[in-house]
Image (cartoon, rainbow, N blue to C red):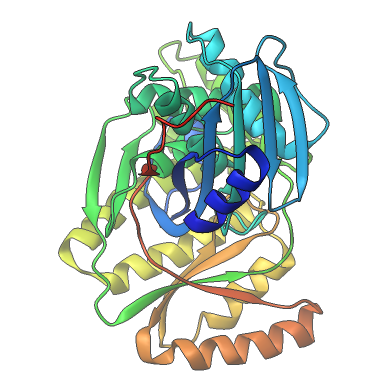
Length: 390
């Protein structure tokens, strides 16, 4: 992919770019907890967005997506949202750099990648993090990684319209090979937790149902959680987010007002507790207990938070009684995308073959599959920043 980006870039702009790659992510456990200031346990996946950039001697921004085979021209002095969706992930981080007092100049940018779009593996964060990291390197802005993460998150809020938590961008930027990240989304303190799955593989099953978070229930779920907190806060002013709320508080102040908001909030509180126990399972090598918690998370996401769909539920239900599968659940924002499965290594091929057949028969869709490794976060892989400006 690095060579492909370089070749396309040189053909379009006649210069050598610097190249950055940034991974997507899957989340072992802890879903929809990040924007509630809870805990998450993501890992950077071995699927990447690659971005090539070079400086210009004018104020133009020249963008090209090989994925969509589309070009866009903008101007560094008049950055604004665009109708071409993929460009907003890039223009959004430029806007955030400017709003935080940094002054990137005109630039050329080409991107491509192999993170499946709409699969719940955070291709959007991969593009945001790769772009902002590359611009930071190109213009020597000297912005630290955490600040880049926060700006990438705000870019998605403002230019894309998804009020995402910080997990996706954090995992993409801070990923570590062979480790998950136990991240406290309130304090942003984090701990690398080794993921040792001897004899097992992480298998991602893509429903090929494309989720669209802006028009889906994602923002609605966030608003419902905030409403539950507001009702508790009327009686307990110290409460700030669901991180501060107990089940007893929900029972007393939310249940009678709205049972739907109650079950949304209850799921988040229970998921935070489940994640902390799951971290101990990983540290002690108790993969069976970890797998059961992953199944429990899917039940909560499907029945309480209601962000699953029939295709995701079908895939999880299809492996529940399979002794070769320790755990399975939907990953990402929901309403489509992938399930994550922890599968005995020797059973992977047979499982994929069986599920591909029955999924096509029952759902009428093709099933895409990925064997997932855990890789490094955002990194510079080719530095040609000394080349001639065009």
